[in-house]
Length: 251
Image (cartoon, rainbow, N blue to C red):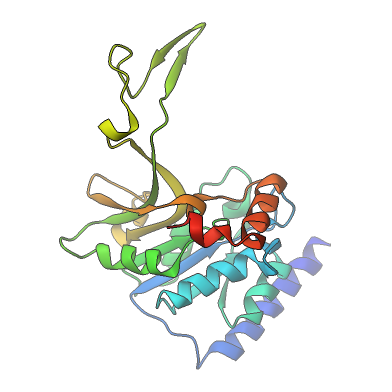
């Protein structure tokens, strides 16, 4: 079965190359969507649909609407490759070692750029953020060089939640003083990575990093921060879309 699946994936990639050899745009800034087939929480998570469109297709659509046309889906599964093929997107054969449960995303990113020596900036997009706005992604790419040059830009959500750290059976505050609890209007909150995207210069990825101390963030809001990791998240995403709340909550 493994050999059959592997051969099928190779055939789909070959077909993709034949179809896209004249249409695919290759450049110094490339989008990579990592989409392995072995997701545990939700089976074939990247093929699950929100509003009738698969998560992987949504990520591709968002990238292209943001003006990023050098888009590649890196996968180890033929069904995901077929979904990418339907959109005319390039397919990269993800190696087994970068697609196992415990493999960090940076391995998949490094594997990809090792085959693309012309790429100087990698835009890693997570297909599990279905409500990411193209304009947000476009602004983030622009922010990499303006007003000053950064090495990375990533998506973050501002949170005003008060956080605690557990030490055995005791607890201590992390981001506030218990003698002067802040009101929401009195502080800027904390920034939490959403994982929707990481825009990194090549030298970072070659050193095994997406970020360093020369980074900035692109702030996302509301539904844009939703990450589909469980069937519950999937139901929430579809409910937001059906009720037309996704755009309202994303502003």
